[in-house]
Length: 168
Image (cartoon, rainbow, N blue to C red; front, side):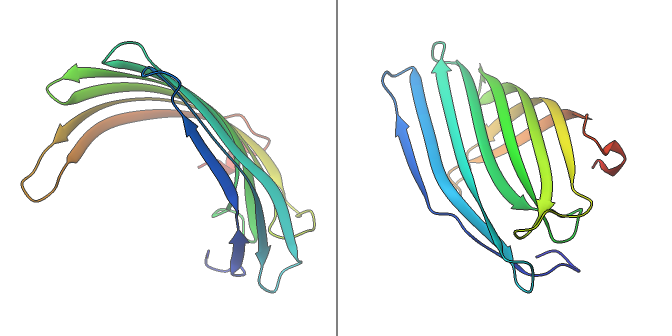
């Protein structure tokens, strides 16, 4: 719930599957239908949601992952609005030894802001985001905890939507 907005409800039944045809290849997917609405709002709206991904291990220490997905979430910048996002991503990871790893990520996201219910929202907008990221991580093993991770990361974001002055 976002301050000043109607409480929102949602329901998302979905099916998920994962398959590894070889030790180096993994495939995954999910499909579902999300219904969201506002208590005291203008009804509810259903949206198909999905996600697919494929990963390939180029040996024991390098992996490449690609994904495509669609989802819905409540906007925290526009009251009583939802965001329908379609995202494509690509990630390259390399194990460096001594429980260290490095990752490069690229993500492109189309975000459509609309009404929290059935009607089309006044002030709706579309945003297109490009994100390039890099990270270095160190894993730790503790006596009381099975594993910990410390990461240093940098993300560069570009907003090419129709309302860049509302970027975050």
